[in-house]
Image (cartoon, rainbow, N blue to C red; front, side, top):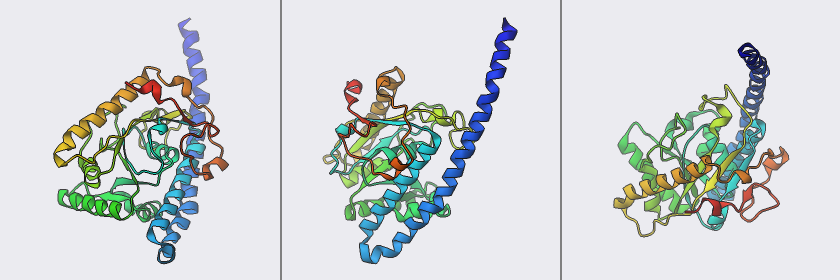
Length: 307
């Protein structure tokens, strides 16, 4: 009996191995192909800044980024669902404080949120050919983590840029991807910027992106099709906060993200799973604001995740 089971395991393992190799090759090919196809036109938009204005150019670069990340999810076969978008005002700007599971977190957030979005990123990203240059043109706030004084200067520069051109900001307050999927304590740097900018901060739970890459959370070496979910909590206002409130804010946000993610792990929200991958042509269409039942990905399910 034991030999039969072992034989079955060995037999079933073969096709699965070849399957993910083909899937990984397919995804990596698209990831590399679309960088120059979308990135170079995005870079060329900078030349139009004197005529269109910097604000409009950076919004167009964000649109290009959203298309690229949607294509990445499409090529991967990652069907995504958005819960809690009804908590947000489409006319406002927010800081989104997310847990960090894998390299698929950024594509998911940019694909799912209908907000003009930039990220706070490590300065090394700006040096990636085409991709990093386009990201820089989009207004990304780069932080030099190796030098505290430079990091503070970068945050102050980011604050001034947000005052001049208000937009939403993506944060991963853990600082790096989680090696085991657990949500680590939130760091305060980016949250201090939210307090200084007087912008509300939204706790966001990213769920199941680790399953796409398995243990290879930082590469395309082993890619699997998997449904993923974004759970958006209720905004936390910072208008009346001061620098001294940064510790409490970071703890409160991390606690809420952990709570939502734990409920998801317990099966809450499973009925909302969307197992249908977005079509290729759908990647070129902007994500609609809530409510958009026809879209099939933005669902009114946050009531199941409330306290």
